[in-house]
Image (cartoon, rainbow, N blue to C red; front, side, top):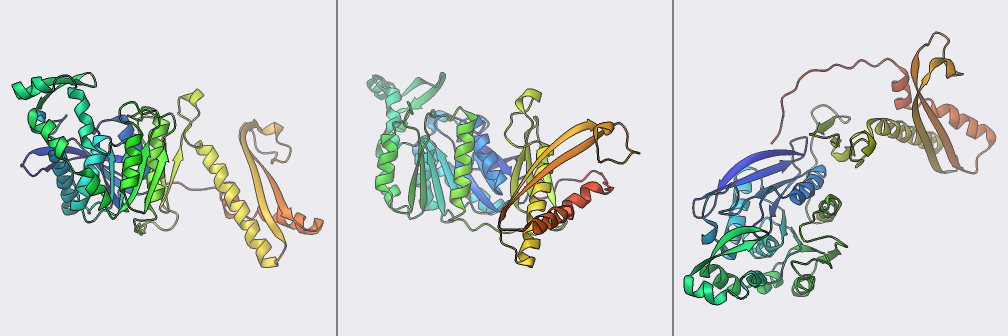
Length: 407
């Protein structure tokens, strides 16, 4: 995933800061818009993890700071639920004007409730996902508990939210109490996916039940077992992103892209860690290293991918040959392992080879009613796999710098 910092103006002419997270090839197949929770910012780690999973599926995501938060202009005390809804609509308009109208809307916590209301003014949206969202924004009024009269008399008070002080005016409380989210949910007429944790201590899971009951089909609910409200565990955030990406495929037509370098073109991005994103023929893959060597073990190692390529090619080659011969092959299993060994320990290596060499052990299991002669022949055909031949031949690799393309 690559992140590009952008700015756009809201309805009041204030400049809002945002990041556009795009797939590593710089060529999004669809665009999504993300609205974070109350008093949070676009820098929330869980948002990054969710967007990374979406980018791996070719979906670009715009995440932004609401008015008065982080790098966005404006005074937070002048904002409310309605202004948040307006900021979301402005963000969608920015995407439509500068890139492409968003087809997927995602909202976390109060941002989820705002997204449900804003959706009616974003006609391009086909799929909406909420994460830990309240069904009624007046739920947030609990932060003023015991201080309502003080707010009414003074007109403005300071309240601690998440350990940080924020200024609130009476208009904020008035606005959330007047929001009509239930009507907006009922009239949504879009695919809806609801995420909520049964142990969410900020927004009770009953809110998810009310959203689900108010919405029309198609609607789905996913329980985030043992997850907290902020999705602090990276695995929970990545899970949410992966599910949204898979679910959205049913409702959002994904454009197929042409590759300038041919059908085998691959793009790879490695950031500040070993975690690596791969784009191959429009498919998203991951690579990493084990934890013991400094990685996070979220994907196979480069050598693991190499063996996977050989194994896949072997299986396909045997399947093609067996089908052509009309042999009763039901299933082909290929097991591989790689290691570095001393040449003298290689019993079938050329005598001229010395030093340490790479050895790949490949075991093949073919399921089917085959004769011994047919099995012997398939073992010979395995060595004709194109990837096998490439690995055994001298390969010329050229390396040069290439400027970034796409978004």
